[in-house]
Length: 91
Image 1 (cartoon, rainbow, N blue to C red):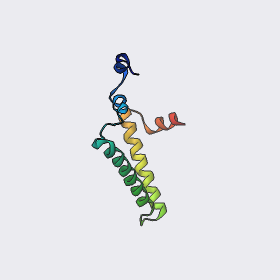
Image 2: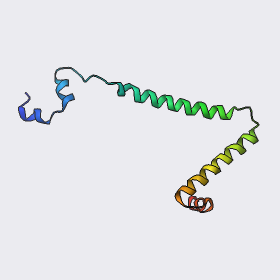
Image 3: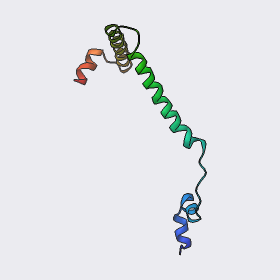
Image 4: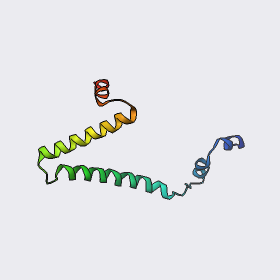
């Protein structure tokens, strides 16, 4: 049998489980996983769209390379390093 001292250590879910009940699921229990899956789908779709874009492969690779360099430069400027310094630290 359960004593009063044991009841102090129980949380809400433990007490409900004693009666065969469970807590009601709220909107966040299904909304957050759905938004996460949607975000992954959007990112994958954008990536595939870039890969099958009507640009020639060399031009697309050059565009991606330039965007990555711009991103590296922006990140280096934000941290106060030059791109060459950041590249030597990563190697």
